[in-house]
Amino acid sequence: MKTSKLIIAGLALSFSVISNSSFAQAYNKCASQNVITESAEEVYYDPVSQSQQIRTVQREVSSDSYGNAEGNQYDLAVDGAFEGQTIAVLHLYTGEGFDFELPTNALKEKGFSVYRWINRPPSAEVLKEGLDKACQLWIVSSSTQMLNKDHLKVIKEFFDAGKGVYIWGDNQPYYADANYVAKALIGVEMTGNTMGNKVVDLMMGGKKVGVMPNHLITTGLQHLYEGVTIATLSDHKDLEPLVYGSAGNLVTAVYEKDGKRLILDGGFTRLYINWDTAGTGRYVKNAAAWLVNVEKFGDDVVSNAVLEESVIEEILEE
Image (tube, rainbow, N blue to C red; front, side, top):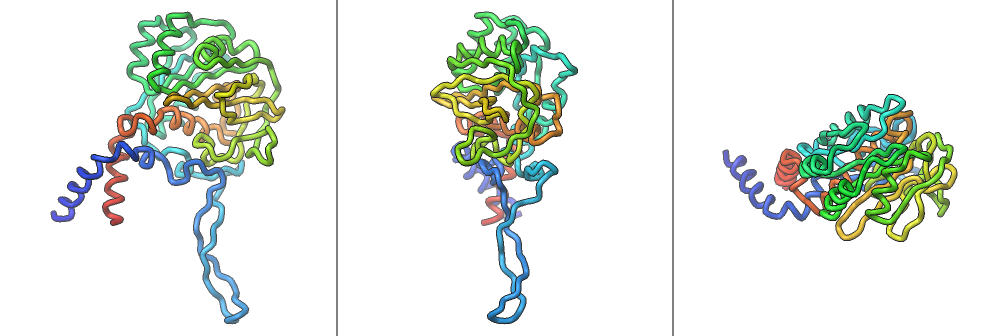
């Protein structure tokens, strides 16, 4: 009974300051690390003592068949971190069997539910009602523009409030609404039709091919499938490159300014083609965890169960 009371008292004290550290509870300890290591003991022969000794070394954790750290504990967010949070999706391209099932299942692991408007957008009024219940908006563009100025006004208000936006396009002409929205929000567009269909590795030595290291979204990723045929993003001073394709073209970039977060992506084919190729599931989960913007919204967006579990662990460790 005494222990229970101490835990309850500790919870009350901890929750008074938890909004300042909610991201610490929502994120795994490996956040922002691409090459993840762990401590391990190994036996070695010491020639001085002429005996076997034990020492602690750092070694890379087990990896999957593509070379990325294996296990959800190496994603950006802990499982269930965002239980109760909804991702709204304007799913305007559904060709080639693209039913959004694979991303939906992956996002559920982190607690997200997904609500989609399929093939055509709703009215601006209905869109606003849906976004009022969402933590972020994903737009999957088609080849013709379907969104209008009223939709754009709703999306801009959502974005300006600090809610995350992920804009997905693909090879020409499948970026009509992607460009319409991205140009209005941050002044950027995508163009072209570049063949990809390769796995890119960590960007090294200043070479513009591969995955940007040490970003929250690329946590646990050393290798990533780029998509089939992809569009190229235009350069912009406020965009931070995240993925360069095998052809050296900028495929994915992030915008983070004034408390607002946005991802722009020219390769939506990886959401349904070759899903089990390097890193896609982890990338999708990490992107959503970043867009929820826990650094801004704190415990308003983090699952109470995760917060409570983290606090109890800290108290028991003391």
